[in-house]
Amino acid sequence: MKKFIISIAALSMFASAALAADPASLDNTKTGLSLYAFKGTTAGTSDDKSRVAKTSTGVMLAAKSSDVGYSLVAQHKSGTKVFGSANDSTSIYSKPVTTKGTGETLTLTTDKTVFTGDDTWTTM
Image 1 (cartoon, helix red, strand yellow):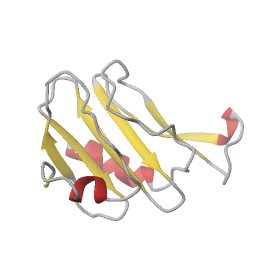
Image 2: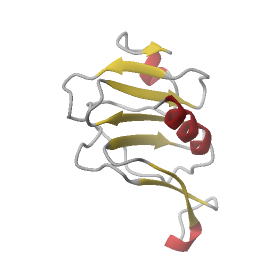
Image 3: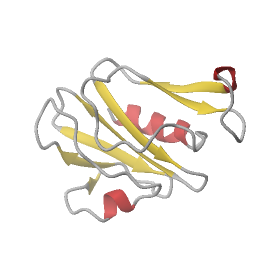
Image 4: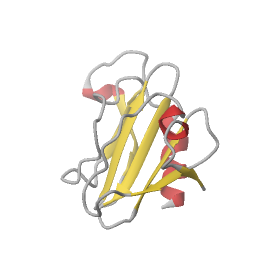
């Protein structure tokens, strides 16, 4: 899981602001999906994007990005922890899941404040 988060964090630095709408939680019905980034500076056709990561079956991923930063979190459906990181942090954060098998509810920001402003997240 650590290698997964590190890989996603490194690759997400190249993702554009057009990743997706702001996620309100990790969705346990959407696993094994791909993370795409637009190649240019604006959202174009489907030919103007590159897949930068793909999650394994059972892994939920949520990301938020802007032109100044990003944060992302990942959780396995059978896992007991959720992991995350942000562009302005060298740390990987983790916290226990509220209910195993369901996606955590969260409010992502485009920096590390999503993790540092909440006492339940700890650094690894």
